[in-house]
Length: 388
Ligand SMILES: [Zn+2]
Image 1 (cartoon, rainbow, N blue to C red):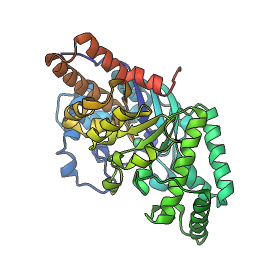
Image 2 (cartoon, helix red, strand yellow):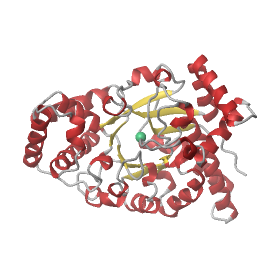
Image 3 (cartoon, rainbow, N blue to C red):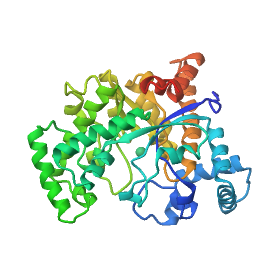
C-alpha cells in the first residue's frame, strides 16, 4: 500500500481561526451546517468517527471519546501554539492560502486578519480575497456606484501588493452560478436601488441576502469586475461550487450553471478554480476541467466532509479531469483540526485510489507517487505561482 503520510501539502483554500474565539464544546464544531444539529446526530457521523480516530492516534489516548476530547481541550487551552504546531507538523502543511472572508462581522461577529493568523501557525500563509467581502464593505461605507467600483479595484490592488494569491467568489451562496454579463448602466441602477435600501437603515447583509433580480445584477457585475482584476494581476479566480453550510441552496451551485460565464471571452484567459470539486457534482466538475484549459478544481471541504465517499469521489474526478489540474485544499475553519484532518484523510483516500489504479494496471507505482505529489503540492505551486 502506498504511504503518503509524509508528503508535504499546500492547502489552497482554508480559513483563519483563533483559539480565543472558541466558545463551544469541541463536538459542536464537527459539522458543516449553520443550522443547529442535535449532538446525537453529530456523534453518529463518519466525520466525527474519523476525527476521534485520528485524534486518538495523535494524542496517544486509547480511551473513550470523552477522554480524547478532554485531552484535546487540555492541550489546546494550555498551549494553543504548541498544539497547532503538533497538528500542522503531523499533517505536513507547508503553505496555506487563506480566505479571510470567513469568519466575518456579518456571519460570526468578528473577522481575523491575515497578520493575526500568521502569528499562530507554523507555516507560510497567503491571502485569498473574497470579492463579496469587499463589496459589502463598500456598501457599508455608503459609497456611490462609481466610488464603489474605484474602491473595489483599490482594495484588491492593496491586497495583491501585500501578497494575496487569489480572488474568490461565493456568489453560489447568494444568487447562484448562472452569472450573466451586465452592462454598467444596468449595474449602476440596481446598485443605486440597493444603496437606497441600505440608507433606509436596513443592514447590508439583509439587503444583499435577498435573491432578487436587483441583487443578482450587482453580484453578477462585480463577479466580472473580479475576473478583470484576476486577469490584470495574473492571479486565479476561485469559485465556490457545490455544497457549503446550510441553509444554502445547493441547486444554485451546480458547476454546470457556469456555462455562460466560463464561455465568456473575458473569462477564457483567467485561471478559474472550482472550489470543493463541485461536490456532490464531481463528474460535472471533472467534465468542465477536462473541457477548458483555464478551469481547475480543488478538493477542499469534499475532503474531509465526504468522509467514506472520498475514494469514490476522487475516482469520479479522475474519470476525466487531468490530474495536473487538481489541487489539494481543506476548507478548514473555526478549529485547527479540520486543516489537519483534511490532509490526513486526503492522503489515505488518495493512496487507496492509487493502489486500486495500480492493481488495475492503469498506473505504475512511480506514476502514482508523482500524481500524489502533484495533487498535494506541485499543482498548487504552479497554479498560484507560489515561489515562497
Ligand atoms: Zn471556504
